[in-house]
Amino acid sequence: MKNNAFIPSAPVTVNWAVTNACNFRCKHCYSRADTKEELDFEALCAIVRKLAQAKVFSVNFGGGEPLLRKDLPGIARLAADLGLTVSMNSNGFLVSADMARKLKEAGFAKVGISIDSPKPQVHDQFRGVAGSHEKALAALAHLKEAGIETSISSVICKINIGDIDGLVQMALSAGVSNINFHNFKCSGLGFTNKDTLDLGPAEWKEFYTRALELKKTVKGLRISLEDPIIASLGHKNGDSLVKGSVCGKLSLNIKSNGDMTPCGFIPIVIGNICKDDLLEVWDKSPVLEMMRNKVPKGKCLSCKTYSECLGGCTARTLALTGDINNPDPHCWVSPSGE
Image 1 (cartoon, rainbow, N blue to C red):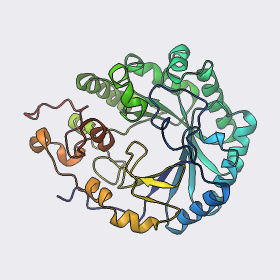
Image 2: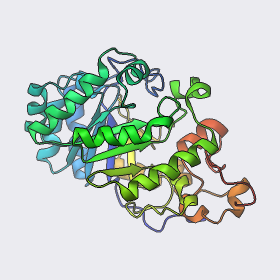
Image 3: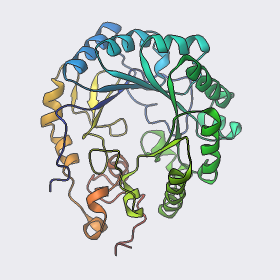
Image 4: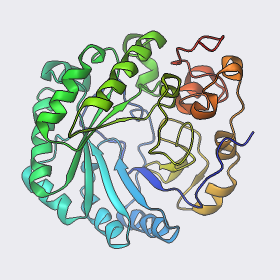
């Protein structure tokens, strides 16, 4: 079954964990146990040139905490000079006014800062570092002053499900352009702590119902919802060129040692950017082929919105069921399709 008529000839976005080192101790971290191997500056520059040659549109640096790589500005500057749109996800702890200016000079177009609660003590406990909430808000102000577009990334889970409106108000007060509500992934520590952090299907339905209301009514702030299962609430993601998860269809992940995976939450290596041809992997990987052409199982067979949702989040389904074609465990739709 062909789920998507359009797959670009190269990844539109590459998410790149340039390091798995981190100064935080987040309870949901997916990369804590990942490889500690890192490539040197010259190898990273060679990868940037490969991405540009393949006509990748944008690169988003992550980790770990990408700013622990002191050479990150140099890597970003090369990427921007070669025509790539450059962005980053950071916890914000190391973003001083001086660092924000350096990031602007390095060509960063956008920086997302992780803030998971409007309440400082809740965020700090979740992230494992005292004062991290205050530092994150300060980072947003420094970045804005430097002329870099900012966004907030919030992982939705037990700690913040009751304060979605508070997160939106915080984003409005911080003057960011966008807040990203990320669905909880059960990878790494996210799997270990899923029983205390993850929501049940009914809770996810309640959250998305409220989030979609806010998306329609809040002015001056984009509210981004990445989860395909919201199709069952009548929401079609018109911002995306593909149905279902974008991983392996519009985006690809590079690990700190150069290994390529469909996304940061799917630990299946499909090649190594240092050794393999990116476009050949993108075009011929059997793993990506399966992800692009999922086959419905279980209640998905009778679901009226399967053609939009395509079974939900592939990473979460794989982590919790072992089969990417199974229904997303977060899905609240009953087997009868209601």
